[in-house]
Length: 213
Image 1 (cartoon, rainbow, N blue to C red):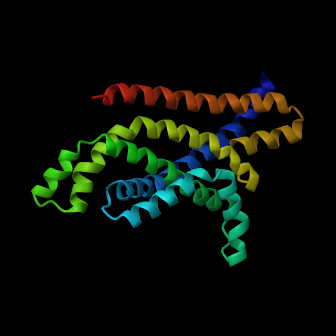
Image 2: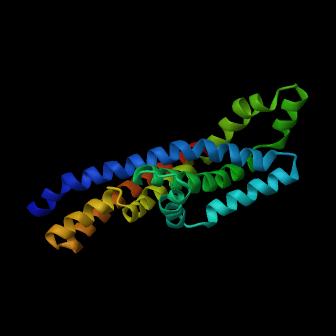
Image 3: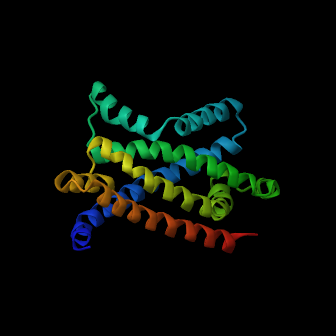
């Protein structure tokens, strides 16, 4: 037990970094996904809609690890070199934007079409309609799903170990490489992942009940 406790400072530092990766990638991915989902769902232009839907499906279809490798190893071939941190952020932002936009599109379908028609009848512009009418309701409807997705993003930060980013799994691996007690340290790291994910799932369930119509 004392050995496990001695590992906690390094693991908690890795956990803090994993949470920071999750926060920053969602901070960038959520607004982008919100705009993409709104435009793809409500634009009257079919070519624009098809293009955005294709981009969304591509972002969702590519595994996050593939996107990470494309960013970290591919961009240097065109003279763009990013640190491991920003490579992870960029890769996760692309993936997040695709998944968030799909969540937002589903939320937009839950908003009565009559509200958009009323805004047009009142002469309210598209930007104001989006910011004052559509976005608040879409966020309210999609918040439980977004929190559940945030838990998935947090779990996915373990992929950052592939580019030597010092997150939770990387910290556990480093401890295991020194002590050779891989089973114990990975079980403890898994428990830390589980605590965060279960807490997020509980929060999503509570918000879903609170925001239900």
